[in-house]
Every structure is written in structure tokens, then in C-alpha cells.
Length: 150
Length: 487
Picture 1 (cartoon, chains in turn yellow, blue):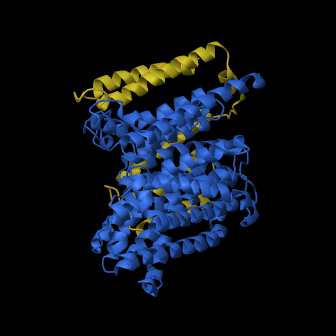
Picture 2 (cartoon, chains in turn brown, red):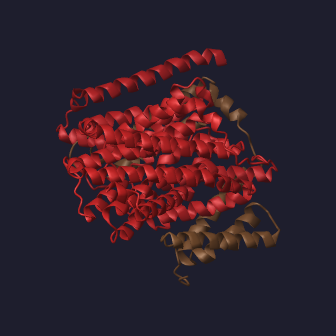
């Protein structure tokens, strides 16, 4: 029921964005707006369908009950997103060679709560060096960063 | 010319191309189109046969290599191997990665060689058939491909449809290819290129899996088997030759139609395999047919795509466009008379493709023992390494850090969808088919000056519409029949 309502809201927001953000090329339907508009409408219809199914007490509720749950799910998901965002930020500024070992150590210690520092640091250094060798040999440049330029 | 195809220079170029293609295909973010572009300068100083042989070998190797990361890491190395993840990764989790990898390489070689045979024998017939596929027919074919959502929707068709629509929505972001109008880019330059399909796939496949691995680690669960065998039980493939043949036919036909490509062929073959299987419910849980079908089909695309390229000078996908460039650089102009006027050269090139498949087969089968060692790494440690690979793979596609942010966001949204029991496979299908579906629909309408009659004038299009309606109808009928029993 709640998922259906959320989908309807997403669809309405999408349709509003399509109307305000996509200029009308004036070449008639479908034009650049047509396909995204159609998808918004279909999503809204599916959302209403899901709400109706929820009111009828269908399999959706059964699914919710049977899914496995883990403790600390939100912190781990948010932490993973945080690690990736931090990595992207550091790649652009510190470069691959500095950002990668830092992020590996952070993920191991922060997300996985590992405290055996020697294997962690060895893995961070080895994996970074291995990736760097492979990508350089294949002629694909990795980010060097704007701070140091490695 | 035939002697030149087996000369040490050509064999060395073919071997180098095969290995480079395999490596590029196996590393997420590095595509074989990228490998082809990078290898192109090396061919400038070579004679035509070794030069083109090297490019063909990169193409075959790259298409095959995508399955390695799909099976071992759950990340498609190339968009064409996305369908292989569903069952390949499940087999790897059960400790049967060697079986999955072995099946993938044999199916790939079968598909590649089958399409080569078709190309040698039926080049003119297939080309004349493929050229009759205009925008209306391709739209109908892609719509038929979209009907596979019904099969990929797991338990709830409604949730599958929601997932498919979400995938299609993501692919509308970016510069509109027909009118050149920015769509939902919010004034950012980076979004004008749209959401890269491979970036989205990396996020959707890998990040939810890594988050689950971290959670399982915290809950002190051990999701991976303790032992990973490196043996390949050949006998297990015995019942799959007929499926390989059918999937290779699908791949060859789809490949011959310009504007389609490996991902579409792989999903069509996957759905075909699941639909005609005696155990369709096993698909997605580690069924060998779920690897054999997409891998034969996506590799058969190669021969199919080369048919319009050699006989008509029309490249079917970006990879064949680069190969076409290679041919032109060496003074070879593909077209209707190309095969007749350069018969000995063309047959020498066919021979080099066979050689490249032999090399790929040997390297991959030998490499299985090496590749499966990855699975001996503790899963949570592998998870951290996968996160780094996801990031640099996303970066490498367009040399843009923006894509790393995008991958991270899509990945976490993918996890959220998974927790809401919205299957990810239809999202991927939407990503793969969305751009072609819209582009071909609008092109057809432009050609017909806005009349929808164009879609019903072609017998091919009508056939595909009828098949789509039949599949959707059958799916609804079977789900309504299933419901009373489950209650």
C-alpha cells in the first residue's frame, strides 16, 4: 500500500519535472517529452494498481513478511554509499594512488570493523598497485588528482 | 592469402588481440569497443590480414571475457554479459564457478563459430533479410524483447513491470538523440551524455550484492562455499547443445540487424531458454541454460553484425564501426561486391576468426583454474575490492568521476529496490532496450509523417507485435491459473 502510494508520488513528481524541464520541440507528439511522459503515466497506473492490490491483502504483504532482515541494515547501506562518494571525491582530488588505499582501509575498519592492521594495509597497498599496473599497461589512465598530480 | 592467415605474424597478432580482448572484457568498465579503439593504432603498420585479424580477435575475446566478471563477481564485464549474471553468479555462490565459466566459454565459442559459418554460407541472403528491417520492424522486435519482463519478473508481474518502467525512465535522461533537446539534465553538462548503460549495470548488480555481503559478515553468516573446485565437468553440458544452436541462431539474426546488438540478443535468448525449459523456475537460481543461452547468443552477434558490415558497409554496433574503420584504413572498402572481389582475403579473415576462437577457448579453459581462485578470497574482503573495481570501472568508461557518483547512487537505489522486492533484472532490461525502443519508434513516425500505419504495414512488425501480445497474454493467463494453487 505504502509502496504504491510512493510510486504514485514519484510518478507525479516525474511528470511535473518532464513538463518543466524538457523543452517542447514543437514537432508534435511524441517529441522529446512524449516517451518520458508516457512512462510517468504508466508508473502512476502501476502505483494505483499496487495500492489496490495492497488493499486486497495480496502477496505483497507476504513478501514483506518473508524477506530476510539484518541488524544495522541502514548504517551499512549508508556507509557503503558514503565510502563510494568519498572515493569519488578523493579520486578527483588526491588521485587513484592515494585515494584507493585510504578507502580500502576505511571500508575494512569502518564498515567491516576489522582491526588486523597488517593484512589490511598489505591488501590496500597490493590491490592499489595491482590495479594501477593493469590499467596503465592497458593504456587506460586512472585519475591523478588535482592536489598532487600522481 | 590463406598461407598469410596462418603466418607467424598473423597468429601472433590474433593471439595478442584475443588476450587483450579477454582482459578488457573481463574487467568491468573496460569494454571491447575501447580495446578496439586502443589497438587500432598498432595495426597501422601491419599488413591487412594480421591487422584485421587482430581487430576481429579483440572483438571475439572481449565478448567472451565479459562472462568472467559476470560469473565471479556478479558484475557484467560488458553490457552483453548482463543476462549471464543471473545464473552465473548463483552458480559461483554454490561453488560451481568452474562449471559456469566452462559453460560460458564453450557456448561463446559455439555461438561465434556458428555465426561465422552462417556468414560464410549465407552472407547475401542474411544481408538482404536484415536490410528489410527498418525502424518500425526494429521497434516491434525491441517491444517483443521487452515482453521478456514477464519472464524476468520473478514472483510478481506487477513488480516486474514497475522495475521495467523504472529502467526505461532512467534511460530517457540526457540529450535527446533526435531533437537534440536536453531531458532532465537540470543544466548539468555531465548528464547531457545520459546515464551510461554499463555504469548503471555496475551499480545495480554489484553494489546491492556488496551491501548484502557486508551485512552477512556482520551477522557472521558465511554465504560462500568453503571449497571451490577448479574442475570442469564436461558431461553437464550434454543436454544443452540444442539450446546453444537455437540461441546462436537468435544471436546471428539479431546481430545482422543494424542498431540492435549483443545485449538485446542475450536477453532474447535468455528468455527463450527459460520459456522453453522444462524447469523455468530454476532460471535465476543457477541454471546452466541461463549461461549457455545468453553467451551463445551474444557471441553469435559478432558473425551476424559482420554480415551487413562486409556486404553492405553498414556497421551494426560501435565495435563493428571500429573494425570498419580498420578496413578502410587498409584500403578495403566493404560493400556489395567486397566478398566477390576480395574472396581470398575474406576467406583468410574467416580463417583468422576460427584461429582466434581456438586461442580464446584454450586460454579460457586453462584460465578457469586461475580465475576461480578469486573465490577463495573471503567474501567481505572481495566485497571491498569489488567496490573499488566498481568505482574505477565506472570512471574508466568515460574518464568521468561524475559516473562514480552516479554508479554509487544507482547502486544504493538498486539495493533499496531489492529490499522492496522489486526485481532488478527488468530494470536492466529497461536500460538495455529503452534507448532503441524510443529512437526507433520516433524515427518510424518521422518517416511516416506521424502515421502509426507504418507499424502495421510490415509483416515482420506485425509478427513481432502478435508474438508480444501472445507472450503477455499467456503470462497473464498462467499467473491467474497459478494464484488459486498458491493460496
